[in-house]
Length: 270
Image (cartoon, rainbow, N blue to C red; front, side, top):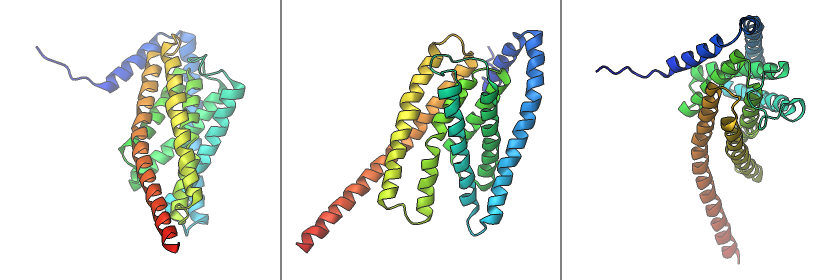
């Protein structure tokens, strides 16, 4: 008996084609008409983010390329959080109770803006080789997830919610890096940034993200492929969580050492 090798990409193609074939002729035509401007808008956003980076490199030439790239990352994080927060809390629908709904123009715009950025940042990371496998996997899954959401034309609200939860800690992460580069990390400000980052990550990525994944899985509306993507993104959050736990342990040891050192110094003065 011969065994066929399992190919995940074939499974992805199978589910995508099955979903596409199940659509009506009108839906197929509307999908083709919608994807053309989406592709063009994505290329435009990619060019805008890349141009922003090159302008920063020109105006801020005394800083490193990574410094300027992280400035772009910081701006994208703030833009993405503001847009997706408005989508979730004002424009709707509520992602916990209405997953799997059709994409709205505002959701498509937010996803395309972020897709252009992630393509730029992925290319930058691969060129300069600055990130590890976990971060590259995060970028790859985010890009594929956004493309899948735009292609299927639904579950945009869940993707925007995931984008909000992923990017809300990004400004703190970039602030931490900038503090290190300027020699201000070993200060009370650096401690505050670390504590706020860990708390926000645990609350948003683990607890809130887990709740949303549960609502996604029990709802009959989202497609199976979307649910698989949600499980993969949540598993990746736990991979980051393992690194954060190690960081917290090291940070606590350093705080205890500094406290003991201050006590010894105080005892000597007495």
